[in-house]
Length: 583
Ligand SMILES: Nc1ncnc2c1ncn2[C@@H]1O[C@H](COP(=O)(O)OP(=O)(O)OP(=O)(O)O)[C@@H](O)[C@H]1O
Image (cartoon, rainbow, N blue to C red; front, side, top):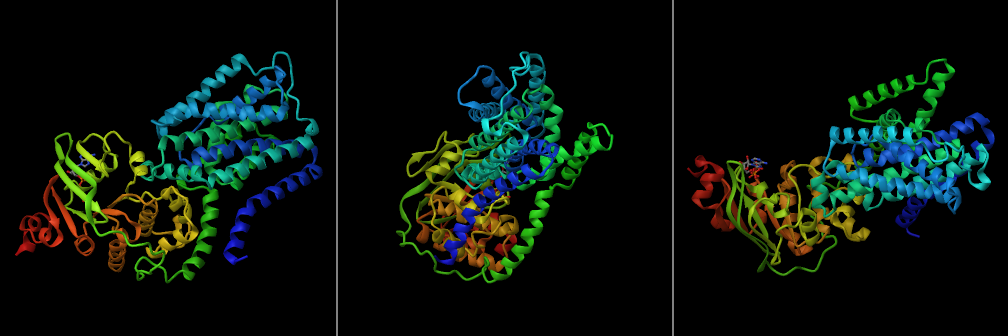
């Protein structure tokens, strides 16, 4: 087997090997630890599953959710209720039902998150936790009044074997989560946390990304609650208070709970801190103060323990990788990799057509009656002084600014009323002036996420090499912003769109990198069969790439046509370069 294939198989097998090792270690602990420590171990696992869920919604998707133990209560409630009514399937089936029910509750709670952010979302979720707490105290869990205990699953009735059962549940949850984190869902969570616009531009639904994060997070919460019901027999509202939800959130932030091992570390703290306080004769409620202090430290430093450990590790290994790949940079000469059959010469019916576009922001008329066409396989330049309306035009074309007059058509089809996500899926892609590339992903995961189609390793690696980008396994957090923006271009090009709108792709690049980028962009229609609208300030770049140019000034088209004609137009020189340059 070739070396690369062996490495890939090992990478794929590693999580499953870790899962088997974890179950073996769990069994080892169950037979060697004291009975008391085994019982505490079950509590650690219950907390770990809840924190893993928090890691999805807060750590990966970047939303504040302060009601994780409410979802745990939903899981515990279903397990208790199904036990009371004697539902078939036994504990394992009830646990699964509890997880699904909590996941559904998570979607309901996630709906406000589609509109709310930050503090507002925190208030809503904490309010929900408080309301659920009051309701639980009133109605109590099923079986409380009659003293109907939840039976543990048959072969796992005593604490030691229930600990092993809990380890198996944790391993199943963690493995599923690992697979999800490395799927499109996982990429969409990290992308939406970093930039909702960047996510929509990649053709991924922002609402769906947020709701899947809430659903998975809440389902894990529900499973942890169901497991707790099996541990204690009779679940009590005191285990699911808003204050505990808040403390669990703080702990997950502090530990970096989107990382599976750090969720386990957070859970160890969750159980060990109150336990140690009890042993030292200090009231256990002081544990919340300890968690609060750790959370303040994490929020103030803007990082978390897991990230610090990982970054230190990656910096060491990335340093090595950088030295190895020192010859591959954006300024490197263009290599002839992954050559495509040449596309037809520019011309024919326009792929993208903009007619009579007008936009105003209050008194400011950002665009007035703008007309523009991008022919098939052409690179059209769009230039103009600061504030001329270039970004506004890109926003309107890509659907991010819906309140505009006029029409935008792609291959003759009107884009009216279509969201940015829909336009991206139809083949109208754009990049941004600002960095919208989520640093939490690898180059490989990001490019595949943006491309939205199956890519062979050769196609992906070859295109990255063509653009002088780092190799696929590089972490984006170790890549500078200028290079990240070129990787963004690569991702969108590999989606094989009809048109690419490139909003100042050369910003942040050196002179040599500008020249190399120009050479690559010239080849884009030929190699990828994609038409390009290039928005740039750098006239040298535009001159060397674009055959035709449109000039905007004060929101109006000042000139449009072949490059030489437009760039020698006195009105353009006056508006764009300043009068002194005409002299
Ligand atoms: N959200 C907004 N609210 C109010 N005015 C806006 C808004 N966005 C843009 N404008 C105004 O619209 C005009 C066009 O701005 P736009 O950002 O499109 O120009 P630009 O050509 O892209 O500039 P730059 O080259 O600096 O990016 C400017 O006068 C700007 O102040």
